[in-house]
Length: 550
Image (spheres, rainbow, N blue to C red):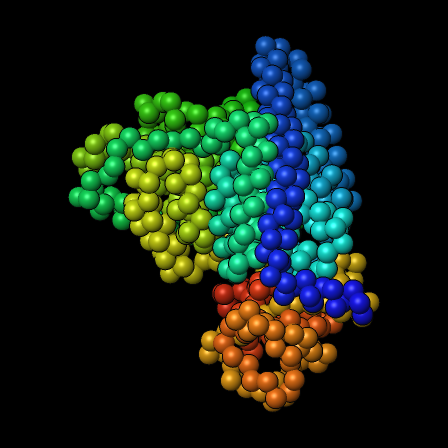
């Protein structure tokens, strides 16, 4: 009881934000160290891969050994995935599920398995990115800090979000992008403790990475000149183009994942062996398509003379190979390949506009950056993050207006085409495949947990007395923070908009209870995720029904 009282006091202490800044800094340092080591491991793995490919090309007698090596790597990765199943894929949906309380991943298993798996996939040449795994590694580093400091479950989720932001920041060398991605895509909520702690984590993580790997951005493009306003018709056209391309990207990824799901015998080995063997061939035929895509970025940054046909083939090849790798469930992300595809898309559009529509060639680099922002916004449905990413990649405010237009138009276009957001769809699949309960991963055992909720303006609880509200079973109001003043929650207290409620509820029923509270109160400090798309909600119900019938 004394411990619970201490937690309540801590939640509403005026020093809480100061505590969270300190903890965010600590999480950022831990996540920055982990992701720095991860990036170094990936870099060395890709260097070794290129050296092996060069050695084989000088003596083709080693080719059978190369494919035998790939089979061994694939076997190790699959064994690790069986040991820790929640390392499959990019890791971002798993962090989403962790933050909303649907998963309780063992941080040490995820950290160790994901680190090794990602490194081996890079050594195998799979077209996967480091950003998704970096977000998961950072999130688990945040959870580790929370466990070591003995924090309760609600604060643990906040520190997991801090770690995810730190991981994204460290992966891109872009702290603001990490902050916005964590808030817009993962936590989906703005509040003071979250923002200050996430910013502290992202900044400290970026500091660690800059000390280890330098301050150079991962993708470095410079706007050659500010686009004149009469050229904004091209910007509008690119925004629509990116929206269509983003919808096609997601639909293709989802379809490929469904096809691989049909391969069940000896899975995951029979799934992952396909992209590994494909990579073994592509490393000799088209080496630029292997790994995340750094070679393509370097070509775009230094060789503007690439033929239009070459750019189109690189774009198509990168998409197909990335779809094959990700659809198999291989542990790795798609954000960096997505940015590479966005750069290729923007470059292709710019070169076509130069050749046939009279656009000055000096603006091609601008359209490369706009393509990155536009495709990111349409695929992830995080337009604000896309704008900030473009700003941090260029270091110039000249991109702000044009990239904002592209991001908004691509976001709207993709929504109008009725294709689900990428990570929202993957999270829906993850939650559906888990069924209603996963006793090995979810909270239970009759435990109680504390959750913060904010009374939304216009919610069904606003203006009602506490005793007149039909609270879900086992929910109790512990304390009310009203404009900085603590209010004792007696039955005669009338709830007002923006009241900060501290509620206690059963941990093993929190999924259903939190959704009901979200409907009653309208918003919460703990990111009560609910799929925006009715199609995703229907898919979750369908998958759960199928899961229950087996």
